[in-house]
Structures are given as C-alpha cells and as structure tokens.
Length: 595
Image (cartoon, rainbow, N blue to C red; front, side, top):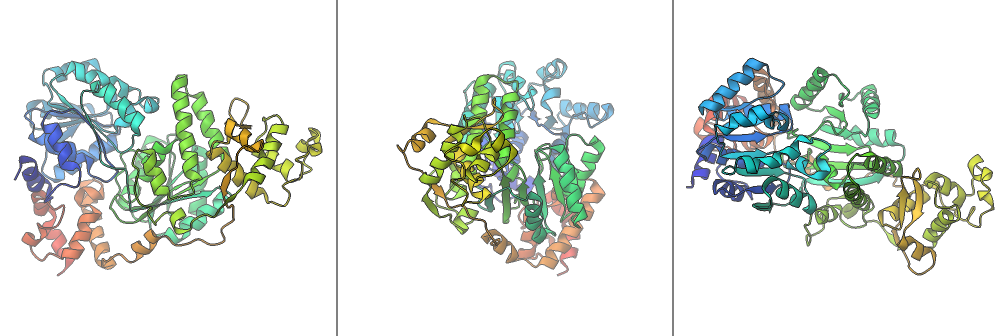
C-alpha cells in the first residue's frame, strides 16, 4: 500500500481515493505545481491535506473565509490531525498560540487569508520556515474576472518567486479555459500542470423559467420543499429582506444573509442554517463560498447570476451528499440589463469588460437552450460529446421548435423603425397596438408595425425578445439605457436574407415532477433510523461547537444505515469512520443504531 493510501485509511478512515484524487496527491508529492479543477463535492480538501501530512516541511493553505478555515481545522482535529488557523475572528493570544504550534512543527497545516498571508511581516516569518507547499483554495479569485472580489489574491503571484522550493497547489470548482490559463500564468508562470476532473454534477436537476409573477413562482416552488434545506439567491440586499419576510409570513423557516447585516447576525444565521434541517437561507452572493452543508436539496435563483461560472459555483452548493437536488433559475431581461450595467460600471479595463459581457451572453444562451441543459453547461467548460442527461427541464419536457422568422421580422422592424433606442416594454406596446401615453406622444401609433402583433400576448413578445438576445440577433445598448439594437445577423433576418427557428412560447399550466424528486422520495434508507443518527450527530456537534458534518457526513450516516454495524470492528468498515472518530463516536452511534 502506498504512503498516501495508508494515510488515507489510517487517519481519515477511507479505503481508497475517489476518482481523480490520487493523481493530484501524487503530483503534489512529486513537487509539481498543479492547478486542480474538480466539481463541488469531489473531495478537493483531501487532495492537499494528504500530501501536506506526508511532506517533510510545513504547508500553508490560503483560504478566503474565516468560517471555512475553522471548519477545516475542526474537521482535521476530529480525525486526530493537528492544524491551526490565524485570522481576525480570533483574539491575539489564540493567533500567537497557533503560530507557535505551526512554527514548532506540532501543526503541519496553517490556514490564513490572502490579506494576512501577503503582509511583509508574515512573509518574513515564513522565510525562516521554508514551507514545503502553498495551497490556494478558491483559486478562481486570482483571475482577472474575480480580482475585484479579493484583489489580494493577485498578490499571491509573488509566492513562486519568493519561495522557489515550495510546491504550489491551486484548487477550484469553477474555471473556464481562459480563467484556468490565467490562474496558472499568475501562480506559477505556466510552469506546472492543469488538471481538470470534470464539471458534471449528475445528481443536480437543472431548470430555468421566465420570471413572471416571481412571488407566486417562489411560493409554488418552495411549498413542496418545506421540510428541505435550500438557498434562495437574490440580486440585492433589499430583495433578500423582502423575500425572507414573505417566506416567514407564509410559515417557512427562513433567514436573510447579506453583507449589510451585522457580523454577529450573519454568523448566527449561517450557523443556524448549517446545523438545522428544513431551513431556507435567503441570500445575496455574499453567502456561499466555503459553505459545505451536505444536505442542501435545492438552489433557487430569483435573479440572473453574473456569469456561467457564478451560476455553476452557486448551484454547486446543492446536493453535496451526492443525493438528488434541484437547481432552478428565474430570469427576465431586466436582470440582464442590470447585470450589463454592473459590468460597465466596474473599474476594470475594457478587455475585462468584453470578457464579462461574453460570459453573460453565454449564460443567456444557456437560459434559452433548446437541448439538454447539462450538455450546454458542460460544453461551456470545455466538456463535449456526452449524452443528454434525461433529468433537466428540457429533457423531461422538450420544447417544440418552430419557424419564427415572420414574428422576428415584426419585432426587428419595430425596433429599427423607432431608432433602436427603446426597451422591450415599449416595443411590445407598439406591436400589440397599445394606446399608451408614450406610444401616442411619439407618434408610434402611425408606424406600419403598430398593432401587427396584437394577436399575440405580451408574454410571447417578451419571450421572443429573450430568445433573440440569447441567440445574438439582438443586443442591449447599455450606454443607451438598455435600448434594443439589431446585430448583423438580426439585420439579415429583417432583410429576408436569413431565417430563424425559435422554441415555441407557451405558458405551462402544471409543474412536472423531476426524476431527481422521484429518486429522492424512493431513497433506500430507513428515514426514522437516518433521522435518529442525524439527531445524535447534531447533539455531538453542538457539544463541540462544530458543524454537524465535521462529526460525520450524511454519506457516512447513510452507509451506517445500510451496513448496520453491531460492533466497533464492524463500525470501522463504514465509509468515513477513521480510528479517531471510531474512538470518539463509535459507541454513541452503535447505541443510536439500537441493534
């Protein structure tokens, strides 16, 4: 048995590595700088924790969140491994003690934020220790597209020059090809390997719907999920508070989370969500990075995320236990307009803005996809050639494709004849023959296109406009207050030189159950027994003031239900039960099993 496999078994209680893990471990142990892109829930932490414990020198992990650092340290401690963290959430005495433990070699792993790591004083202190490895977690933050979030991440590019003998491992679940190249160039000047182990999360059922009466859509979606844990993402702090209040008023257990809340309130709300079942976290993107609650059953976006990367990162919080989970997004053109305004108001350079607009274009195209959403998502990250998932809204309820050339020409004509400066609301009013004050004041009731689309409902023209934006026949003029403009391909359709196929626009009258929901209901586990084990886990976690999954993951509890061990020897064969956890928790869970 190799040293890494021996450590994995003796310390962490796993009989073998998951797919892709051992390759990363071997590269880092061989001294190869490595950027590792693995899907959420694939076990990235073990990929650097195992080599860190086997290397001769100490290792430093750069992590973006204090809560994530503390969870990692607690998780290692539960397996009998000494690790420490230094951050602003601890008092000076605790930080000094942590540093002394790391300096003496008692702890081989030190967790820090990039802000603390890149101070002159800390770098000078590390010079004397000569770390064997630096680990950059959430490495996409170092790339240009994420620099505005944590600019200190870019400073990490100096590590390879200052510590030339240290191996650098970078980890992320979210990076397209451009971002991957950028990370590798900055962290180790391209002198290293980029390993991509797939973006597919087959347990997630993907769905997108036009945002209409969003409050009704929200309540309809959440009503059958009242006993499940989930996240509802909102675009603003104001909407976050509004949605949380709405849900509480409807009898849901919901909490808000955004950067405007007091730190103590944010922490309390996060801890409640991590520890309790059936709670809805209503949040901005301030909530999420490092969240490792395994039994989140759904993520609902009430507004368009900023990009495909952001979308993938956010839905990745669901189903980390490998069980079926749902990802639903509601979107409208006003969301796209606001997102483009955010991009144009960013202080970054023009090249960065163009890249961000293209990323948003890709997300809009995904929203209006006519074939398997999973294939569209994977294709964006460079994975092609797969089979349709049979588990997304398009696979379960395929759209009907029809010739939409005539209707598109009506839309484009109205846009062109009004100077390509108006938004979808005004254009729709013209097509439907509205006698609104704005239409009449501008004389648009005299246009040849006035009223030509009155046989179609407002929702049809809104849907058609979304499809034309997603397909690139139209674009939004952000500098011109969001006016619709024809692109070269849209102009060709208007002039009769090209045709266009669209997905039929209908209003769905019923919600179909997804295969994921059906599979979840038929899970082959005694629910009472699993609930009993979760109660014991929650009590142990509360006693130790750690997240529940630090005691045991849901997957481990489910394995206990299947194997139903009767002795400590049998308990040791449960996946995820190492010697330290067997000693600390084995008897308690044997008693809970009651066999």
